[in-house]
Amino acid sequence: MEFDTIAAISTPMGEGAIAIVRLSGDEAITIANRIFRGKSNKELTEVPTHTIHYGSIVDPAINQTIEEVMVSVMKGPKTFTREDVVEINCHGGLVSVNRVLQLLLKMGARLAEPGEFTKRAFLNGRIDLSQAEAVMDLIRAKTDKAMNIAINQMEGKLSKLIQGLRQELLETLAHIEVNIDYPEYDDVEEMTHKLLLEKAKNVYQKVDKLLQTSNQGKILREGLSTVIIGRPNVGKSSLLNSLVHENKAIVTDIPGTTRDVIEEYVNVRGVPLRLVDTAGIRETEDIVERIGVERSREVLKKADLILLVLNFNDDLTIEDENLFEAVSGMDTIVIVNKTDLEEKINLARVKELAGKHPVVTTSLLEEKGVDDLEEAISTLFFSGSIEASDLTYVSNTRHIALLHHAKQSMEDAINGIETDIPIDLVQIDLTRTWELLGEIIGDAVHESLIDQLFSQFCLGK
Image (tube, rainbow, N blue to C red; front, side, top):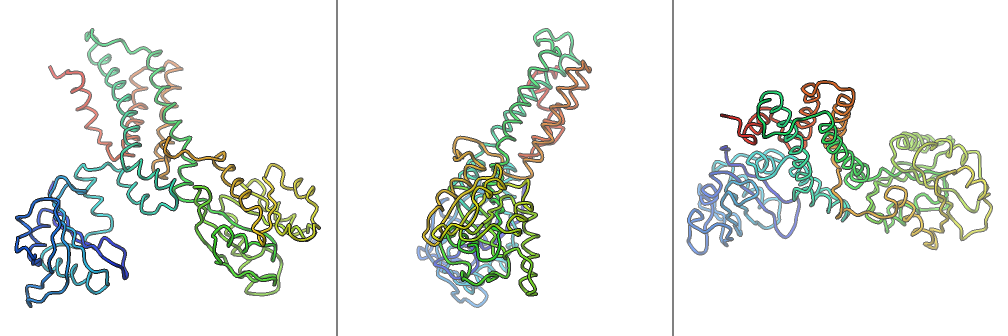
């Protein structure tokens, strides 16, 4: 498969020590060579692969040096895209790196589309679709655990599991095909309903096991949308600051200081929280504060986790009780803050309203109880621990949806077998599962199923 040569800036825009311009394609080395003047006087087209060279980028139209660079030359197929790749290391200024990129485009390269380098790696067979998606997961990872999951997926751990499941289905489908089309083929065991049920249940259980990791995997990938709610001046902003470990929110003794929604990512024992500090939810005549309260109510509806903060030094109010009602049925942790002050709240009533929800007492002023809160968050979603290195987590929404469809197809197949539906009809559901699993790794071309069936059983005679 041949493509044109693409170029793009591969490092974030802005000032830094270095910036990298990357080229990929059959003409990558030739194009770079047109504007590179090496100190060794060697042409880039003549240097060994996977070597780096010091020199200058020169605009040949005006014979002017525009940048001092280090150029890496990597010849395909031993590159990320399996094409010839050149990486030009420039000084990390906006002007210099853009001048180099513009010059490469003038010399014949095309500006790469978003994600096109990874797309070429997929199209050239370097990685499958799930591995390609893991590249972006790795870039966006907010915690070590999320990064480990992305690395495992990038290395093909999920792909191998999916390929193994597809191979099991393929062998079963081939077995059925032989029994139907070649009944005289004595070397193959007869595919009975009992044998087919055993094979179908085995695949079903493996798909279900993968799906059992999806909730935790999705949390690790995308983070928990966590909303801090409570009446004004109970310590919501102090809680945000304690979890973030810096003063992101203004903290005063004046109720209603927080007028809008404040968002921040935090890492709680490997669990990424997309933490939202809201304006205190109460009835108010202040127009600006009322807008903040309405936004708080909207954010509350989309939350994965609620941190409901109460004041240890204040009586439980109707507004507090209304908050318990507002979060009914949602994953909630109740935090009774300001334990450094005199106890006025009715803790027994708080626990009664909380029901099964954990109740944690804190003094954020004295930095007490935060560890207990972090433990409660981790336990609520991960039973206190995460073993990302030992499990293949399914974290991608697209993968999860396809696995749910695959599980349903296997359920349909099992139900069909148990009700003695003809095996050739059950075959339709098994083939559908094979195709759905193939969509995860980007390999679901139906014609390839036919090719593999005959190649495995040597039936082209």
